[in-house]
Length: 469
Image 1 (cartoon, helix red, strand yellow):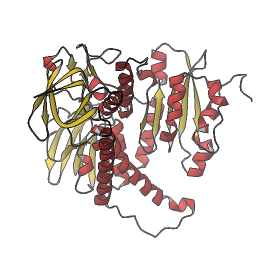
Image 2 (cartoon, rainbow, N blue to C red):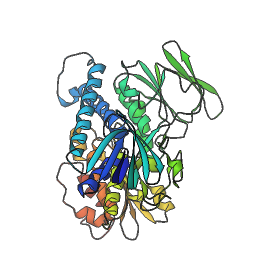
Image 3 (tube, rainbow, N blue to C red):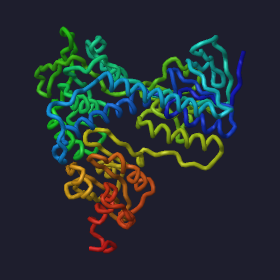
Image 4 (cartoon, rainbow, N blue to C red):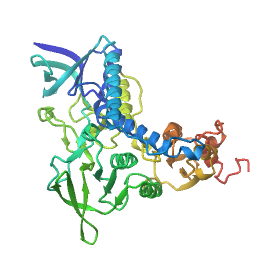
């Protein structure tokens, strides 16, 4: 038995699901195949959503501990942390969101959702192995690969030991560990280090580089480092892990510093978050002209591979690896395949949030990236210590930086550190994506007191006769 479709979409995460639904809504016959147990991908089940559920619990715990600053007298003693309740809430939210995604997909008659594995036999035919039932072949006019990425294990002895886990496993620990060694200070490593430290876990964060968050504005990354130290995270930079060894109910991580001196850190668990690589295994790509490696599938400016009619979106293409980036590519690709005029997303205008404590927001180019791209730039800084909303909320210790072009005053980048920053990065993305000027930003009427008005207040700091002194 062979079933025929217009489009095969492999992967039901934030890259595959939107394009499948959009094409099916336009009456294309679409087969969406997801290897996991539900639609949502890594973002829903192992990344963005579960980590933010823990983040919200950690933030509420921090708020309780600071209640006296706001005139609230709570019962004496440390709040009790019910780890099983946190995990149960996480599981409930994930089930609800996965079911909601499946219900939405099933309302589209032209969309056929199947759970299982699929492998290309040639550029227009694939073998589908459903989770239940017999395998069968499918034919299609075009295909979209959106299989995402997976954690990379560092090539050090002991990396595969039972007490050594990845971000895919950390959310299902049976109990809250007393101590944790985190290897890797990228966004995931930083977020989880601060979350577990807030829960009272003794956290050691090891980073091979000279600073955390290598892709983040350097000044803001350094500011967060100071916050992390105050929060009890033991941060060790320039630490090169050499071996991991079991030790009773935990593990020792052995590492060397710049001078070559040997050190070790103990944790009940070791969490490895040293990067991600594209999921390209068992897709049958070798039966096509598609070029790929562990860094991703090679695509052109319209996300088409070297095999005509075969496209790829999201993490499987490589950096940047963000759920919202995958969805943006996905929806634009759908419009493109429907013959509509589109503009494909460009990394220079991407926006992102790191849910650190406090949050980091970034949109567009950093100072270094802007200069490297040939722009003559200026940078304006707005200190949240003078911001009304930040003072009222008790978080007046952040910074907003706006990078703009010297001659045109066009906004090239927005970078910020502060509680609540995530909620205003949409405006930052709009400013960068639309290329608006600092003058236009200054003239937008923002409600007061809100964090969003920091954009206009920062723009008013630019010396120009257009502004009212």
